[in-house]
Length: 267
Length: 350
Image (cartoon, rainbow over all chains, first blue to last red):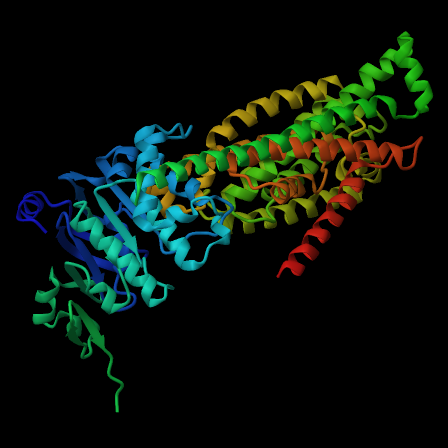
């Protein structure tokens, strides 16, 4: 990452959460959580099941209105943004996409909705964005196929292409690698890294698989309902945040350029 | 990657797009041609023999003109329009609920309309039988109000439009409860029951110019906004969160589509009774013959539904001529057997 990008990223946080509290009925999922999402880098949210990873991500995306606190996008509260303008800046990838009868290209073109609107009259810029997204994910080879005829891994690439087609500066992804075999997980991870480093995108993902999650630049480590730490991957490992979050010994070993989780069965 | 390959790919893409839209357009043309053919046939088929009908066409007279142009033509047109409205309702319902078994009646509109008509007939304390009653504005209005009330009740029960599963469940509950009330009322008044029978089975026999005009108006009012909202239906296949993140006003989209669904269904039911299966089968028939996106389906399903009900109308007049079967029985037989074929084909494929 260039130092210029880094300096700019530190000046204005892409997304800033201030004292957010999220409640579902009587249950408090997040309490007084504050954090800044650094721009032009890939951040992973990790933590045990049910700790509120998805809830945090959905709150950052503006899909959940927090009970208290605010999330600011470029310094302005999410709720104050016009719907389409916000959609041009923050894009969301759901866990799974239905196997519909749409063609790959039609599906990816939906990512341009914030620009083309109801009539779907696409301009040259839209066509180019769609082509770029298809190429970046390798989905251009079967742009003409129906989603219902694709495998899970192929469909996830199409979803990712749909996400990239928005060309938003902030990409939020909920479990983008779940249900994928290891090579496909790495494909997705490398696309995400490329988006952050080469295109200057701000990427936040919730990822279960520890090895894939630690391929990110930064991590947000969550314990039950609270933040354990937010920093670079090496900071997280030095502070042993993961063990604290999961409440059990988590041993991570360095292997080449990546970190690998070493599971230990109790004797 | 070389630029020549990119150009080749975009050319290929353009060609495939043309092919696919051309295929859809071809099917739409086929539906329209079949509808015209069926309309011509329904001018010739009726209680009179084919030869008499042809003679009527050749040498116009006051009486024969009345039969051809004031009874048979509006009936054919009305049947097409009612079928088209049901096809449109089915296409909206199946895409909105993302459920292939969704149909226009599932929010309680049909049972509401039936109850409305029952109450209206009982209140008038007459057993309006024969040709006249369906043309009464009071009955039409009652069916309309009943359908709207049934849908409103469903929406109130599940407190809004956002939960698809509870919406379907509430629709089932409302249909059962209103159906039970209707049955109870009918048990107490056998005369009304006889008058209601054709309404409950669905009938095209009472469609006149006034009905056709009303149906045409509602069809135009529903089709245009539905085509405009179709891209929202495509976006909904990505999941509700993703659709919302793209800037779609989800609540307004649902309210709009449910409004169109209700209006289309209420209009069709008020004029032709509770005709079954057309709304369920028409979108399937389109999807089986050609791959479509939501907008294409919104246009093609009404064309298909119109042809289905027109054909069923013709069959209902032909099978036991010179008398008639209620058209709902024909659509149920045709639609039911089609679904069975679909099921078999699917089982074979898997």
